[in-house]
Image 1 (cartoon, rainbow, N blue to C red):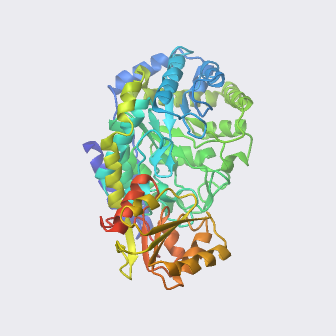
Image 2: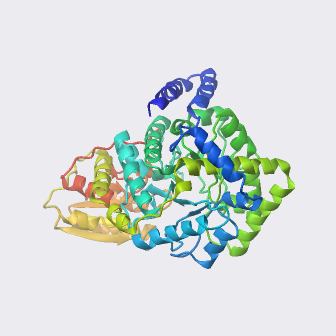
Image 3: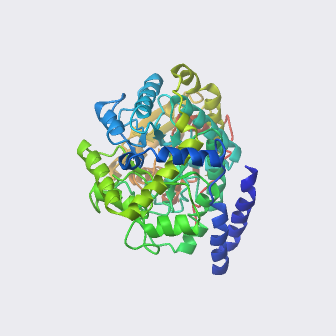
Length: 574
């Protein structure tokens, strides 16, 4: 929107300067306060929304207010007794859908599940409709690949560098989510992935350049907002420099505040999102005692006060290993709320029981009842939650139409958008021996990991002499040598790798093949950083993911039906 152009330009200009002097870095922090103020109302006048929210809050009990804090996963394809209890007894504010939890089987089933849950919420307690959230980032984090358009990864978008593509993807995803009844997307990822060994972000990020991440992220958030979908940007204040997966353990980042503001925080300030998800990361120079999700210094001191943010603060799942190793769930929830979290997300992680739900809700309720300061915090959070629900039209919820959803999901125009993004993202890093495109008459051997999606059928369309071999996900040195011996039978070998830092056996295979006489093409199906482990490889392409659209675009480049148009959105050298 026009109203955002000035602060965004200031932030961009300041960022260029900030790398030269500490003084300018401090100046940047001041400018970012302007850039991070919440955007104008999505629906209706601000005064009317505020009046409606205050009137609704006046009717709510403390128990109902505490329930609004919770965004929870659940099991099953329909409203179970457990979900019914969470809505009726604990007054939960929202649900989050997971394919792994059995929530997503078909278009009609998802629409009915959401409509039934919303009807129950509207007829229970204070009658407040639910946030219905999902992680639909694109690439490897997509919860609807079987029923909706499967878009390329955010890093594929980064390789295109196109705000138009970012907006088109957000517009299409929003249309499909809205048709299902989903109103909240836990995306986009605004982490600046500048650590090649990051095990959890990688291609989920737009790239390693803060300005690129900020530009594309802001475009997507703006488009989601215009389509009535609440975008939740993540993971504040940044998860891109970590080398530990916070699902398993606690990452530690030692960057200074000035460094964070100049890099990791910049995309969040530019996005101006109505909801921000926290990172389960310990920033030792900001708060040596607590990860961001549990840190008042970061959530209140940095995000609320220094950056003047007044939108929703949403936790990442409180069941992730970075937190559960520190305290029981009920204690974690109370600490997160006290630190400044408005929405306590509890994902589909294993080990979460009905007893945990009850005790966690009760723990927060007891803490609020025992502490007047937390009572005030509760009203602040509920006011923010209801304000967002009002602005996005959730308080006037209308059921989704399953017939309309069947038309919208997987729409041909949406698939065409995915295809265009994929075609513009494939990146040829180098081709010293001019092997691309592969000669149509060549005897080609495609070697790819067991977990990779089907590239072979797409290559076979232009190479009838194609042999496909699946290697184990992490081959041994002996298996690498065995594969290398077979290479002499072919004119060219195409080796697909997937995250060499997690599967070093892929590097062993690549090195063994590169040492032979048969020409070798390596294609990275996930992280472009695989090349850092493969200096011997002379021909290297990356597709930033193995969703069907990306595989087809990659095959088209290998076959000579298209050129590699992408540009690396990450640094592969110092």
